[in-house]
Amino acid sequence: MFREEVARLKQWRNGSTTYGGLFDIDSLREDIQELESRIAAPGFWDDNEAAQKVLKERTVMEKTLASWDSSTVRLKISGSL
Image (cartoon, rainbow, N blue to C red; front, side, top):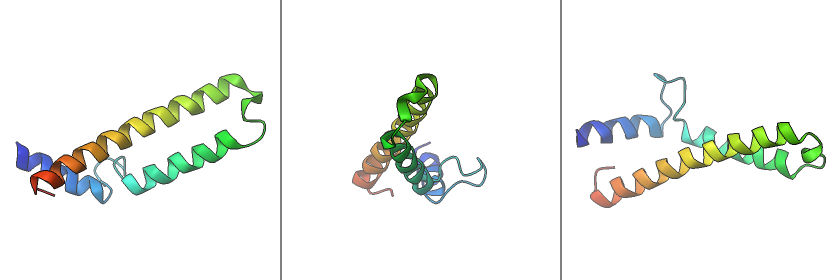
């Protein structure tokens, strides 16, 4: 099972085609940066409901990225990645 997880993470690191790039980590980082720019833009809070949606989207992305980074560190420490 551990080997399967390592193989899956290696595939995701480069952007999975199976999941439509869902695990394309570089794109995820770029998307978070784009959201940060939108959040910092003047008028962002003019539409509170839309702003809340963007913040929730960013939170989901950040949690996904944090999980990825944590898994990557553990695998690097174990020497499997």
